[in-house]
Image (cartoon, rainbow, N blue to C red; front, side, top):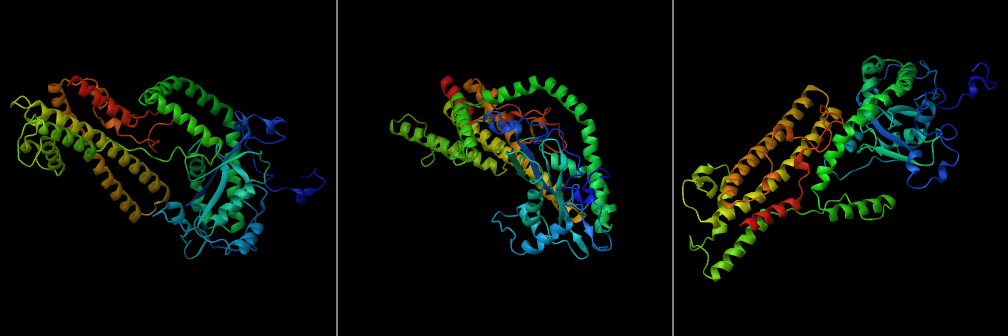
Length: 486
């Protein structure tokens, strides 16, 4: 600043930071009339930021601010330490930690974790560009006791004072609308210096981390053109594949449902007071409902003296349902002599074959539904382990929990495969049509989560497994086809 009349004292907060060239910056890369842009183009001029914390960037009480004064003083990526501590002294005890009723919520749980003896900072928080994964000026700071809102709010508000557009989209520990892993990627690039900066003095540590953040941003600026070109080339090549996958998923849903869904989502996005379309209200066809239908059919035929009487107290539908319940209790299915077990070896009334087929069909859908929920649970547990779990004892416990979940997945997979074998045997007698395109063979490659796995392919390369494109309408259509052939 040798040529600036104001000298070093005229340096503005965050002025040393390398800015993201692709983020919207008023009076820099936005049109003068961007604020009056129509609603369908306003998102182009919105700033997307993500808030997150790093659990590895700790700092020990090795020195004091007086003995080790920093040089940047809030001029780069870290907030001004003096102003930040003054803010904490005023509001640190006034703003209470959030008490959540959600059992074992990770973000809330981490807020109550103390740094421990000799710890000056238990972790580091930030607000960064979520679209292009670049550090924002004056948006990073230390947390003394877990991920407290009083700290994170300061970093966010400090970031919002750095030349932002009128529209800002903020995400905090939820599903991201842009590069979903941007905050995690940014921390991964700085984790290698965590141990070396942990024992530095406070000023040296902030200056060193500022230098690394600046180098990170500078390298991103230099590579942004080639990176965008590479990603665009790959995206174009993958577009057809992803469009086809979406069309398969979309075609599995009734047209009237997707049309209604689109209208409801658009209304909710335009007005947050409208009903939330993501709140689940769906009810699956249950085994009890099918059993009730079978019982009503048996009673109706019994009144007309048309049903086959096999027991004074047990109707045919009840007999088959009880057999499936015994099978669920891990008894040897071959000893139950269900219709699917003796087809080709004994003469069977087709009514019993039909009853078991209908129960098996519903059982297969229920098993897939259970399998999908367990896959989601495994995915969330894996993400939680990778982000929060440290130390051999906690890792071992997490691995044990994941192993138990995997056993449930394996059991549900085996159960579905056995059910499908029974359906093939029963369907051959009933000459059912179309159901095998709905209830497909379940392979190991199909056992993928609904969201991206840490070690799986990228978003542009992954394919949604067929188990996630199943709809209840298919179950109804499958039953209609079976009943029509019967």
